[in-house]
Amino acid sequence: MRKDVIIKRIKYLKIYKGITYSFIAKQVGMSATDMSHFVNGRYLSKNKINKIDEFLEGFLNEIR
Image (cartoon, rainbow, N blue to C red; front, side, top):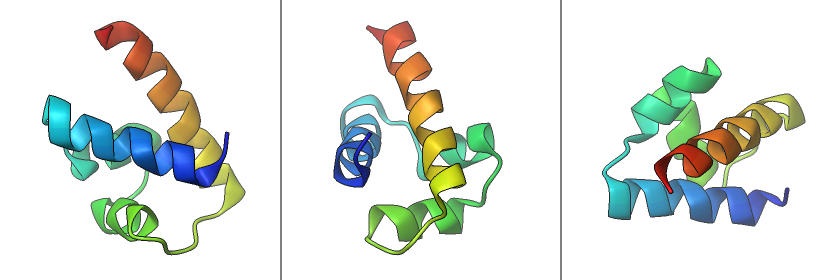
């Protein structure tokens, strides 16, 4: 999945569902600071981006 789509999903969860960057970061084994930096356009490894994407896919399916 493209980075911009992942960022939009994270922002959606934060704004409309009250899910914090800290919660998402903890689920994928990274720091809240890294998550915040990623959402604000900083680089993250493909491995970490893939972990975020996998988590979001499952999480969004659960809350629908």
